[in-house]
Length: 70
Image 1 (tube, one colour):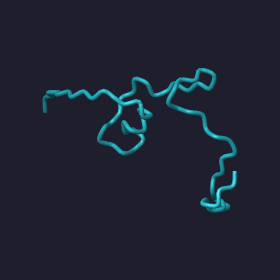
Image 2 (cartoon, one colour):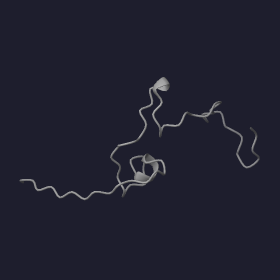
Image 3 (cartoon, one colour):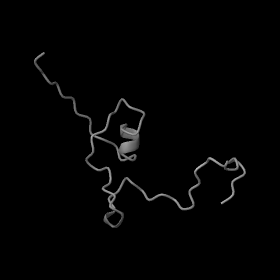
């Protein structure tokens, strides 16, 4: 659909003709495993961040202390 707030795509722009499927929930037909149970990084704003990876469902925070030898 035409939206006057969007610029006209350029020759090098990738244009999607159909909406992407949701990747948050499992979809066996499309081999999408969903994001339930994945480990996220609550300090990240990237794709591994909890806000994106948990799809707004919220998340459980767990603190772990690991002792390793040098």
